[in-house]
Length: 266
Image (tube, rainbow, N blue to C red; front, side):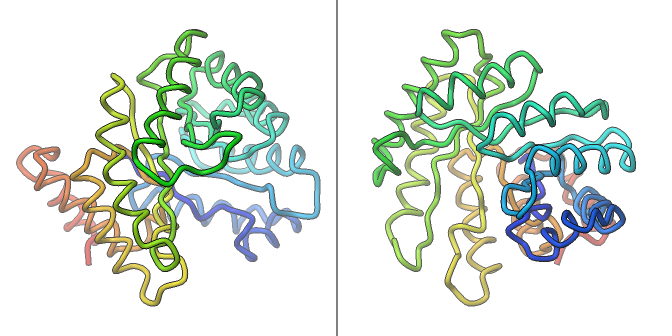
């Protein structure tokens, strides 16, 4: 499973403060810790600050790629101008992912070409102008609409990551189940991938890491390919690593043994 590290997000007060203060050492420390813990990509979101998001993301990309060789980035913004700037600044030699489009045509036509023309992977949220769907079937319908729209415009199916949008079970108890049902439906579209923002499922509950670890194991069994999460959480990383071994996605348990030796398991 591809892990995208979620910690460089300006909704976290310490990250917001570091961006405002241009505290590069703090940002580099966060990026490095996530990569050392097993993240494939470092997600960066600076939409929630009192500054200029375009300038902020320019600074973030520059700082991280200058200090972490070959880093792969997930550019997380609803603002296509911020995404465009980040893509222009990035020359770090790693891979790129963009988060995200929806079924909204305006968002597709502004953001999807940026991903296509820069060979970036693209997260697609299964929601549209009518809002967030409640059932697996409605998630699939939106995914199918997005799939047909973007592939007809030259976007490669294998670079598409559908997020069926898990919601907090504390307030919407059936939504984790509907998410799990939707994963194999969406993957039936073809050579596409699925992803989730893991921590949403446990929002509002105590001891959230227990819920997160259980859910990511169930999602892996359903076919989830990637997750945006905190890779420094050993409970979640242990659950993912064990799940990959149990699902025959870790030949001879090599990655499980490596993670154990490196102290990344509980």
